[in-house]
Amino acid sequence: MQMRGPLPSGFGELDMTKMPRHVAIIMDGNGRWAKAQGKGRTAGHRAGMERLCKVVRTSSDIGLEALTLYAFSTENWKRPRPEVEALFALLVEYIRREIDELHRNQVCLRIMGEIQYLPAAARREVERGCALTAENTGMVLNIALNYGSRFEIVRAARQLAQRVQEGTLQTDAIDEACFAQALYTQGLSDPDLLIRTSGEQRLSNFMLYQLAYAEFVFTEKHWPDFENEVYYECLMQYMHRERRFGAVGKV
Image (cartoon, rainbow, N blue to C red; front, side):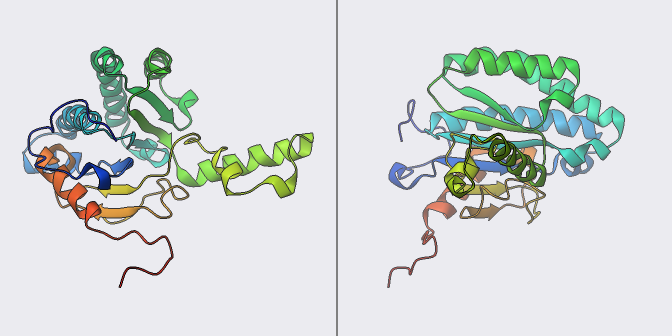
């Protein structure tokens, strides 16, 4: 794992040999943060976007191979229409504002989810950003948009079944590696660490297959308050755990 420069402020002396390769984050608590501040939910989402920008920069600087962010689930369409519209307006703003910096830093933008159902402006910006950064060799920034893990798994099963029906795939050739290649995350390592903010302790239909052996860290901090010091604490928790993957631990 290679860093781009000195450790960011608040990160102390990380042992880079014990760092996760891939971190996934469920960014929760924008609305609760806004309520505590006496502000509307849109203000909370804007504060969350600013925090996202900083976390992406920090993650790239410390040398992560991949950062996956849960931005909009298939269930989030149930939210009030003005809030949904505000979320996608912020997405467009984020990509337009940040894509050149991401590109300069060799970050590769990827999206997982059914983006064909996004509002037209959001879909255009997403596709433009992914195309611009497709050949970059730095951190992969994988954003989950209109994403649901159960649908992803069913989608993968359908794709493989179609290939079997067409005669291009033998049933006995379907193993874990084959199945993983049919998921949105094809080509990415599974997350080593899942972080969820705002005190919630559930997966919410997020990466159910890929998180099979991830370490989970939950923080009470709302997403807009997920500062470097909090991120550092989450990484330190991960680095002090023994990952056994079903084997017997050290005695």
